[in-house]
Length: 158
Image (cartoon, rainbow, N blue to C red; front, top):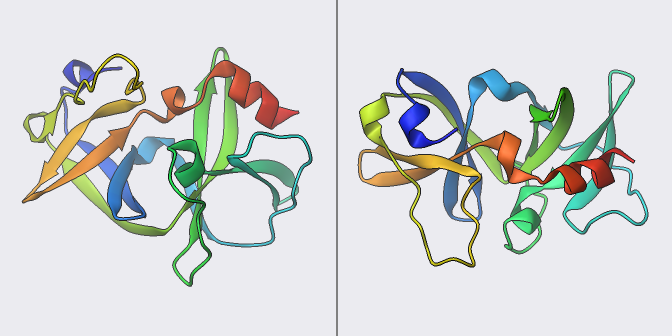
C-alpha cells in the first residue's frame, strides 16, 4: 500500500522510538500492554527480544528500535508492547512491538499525508506508508505488513 492508496480518513496510534514519532493504523493494533516478563529465545535475530504469554498464546516481541537501526529499547515506566496483527502471505501473525511510549490516537485526512522520502537506493523505505503532518511535526506512518520480510517473520515464528 502506498500513500496514493490512502483515500479516506484513518485513525493511527502514535508512538515514540527515541525522539521520533511513528504511527500504525489502529485497525492493525489489538492491544497495548505494560512491559512484562519477556522470555529470551536462543538463536533468533537481534531485534527479537523474546516471547510473552498473552492469555495462553505465545507472542513474539520485536524491539522496533533495533529493527530500525537505533540503540536497543531501554525499559522505563512508559515502555510498552503494542500487540499488532501482521499479514504474512496468507496468514495473520500476532506480534508485540516494543515502543518507548504510546502517545495518542490521531485521525488523519489523506491530504495530511505525503509520500515517504526516497533517500538513495540503499535505504529501504517500503515499510513507510507515508509521512503524516500534524501541525509542525512529522509522523512516520508504518505499513506494519512490510516492516518485516517473510524470512524474518518465519525466523520469529520458530
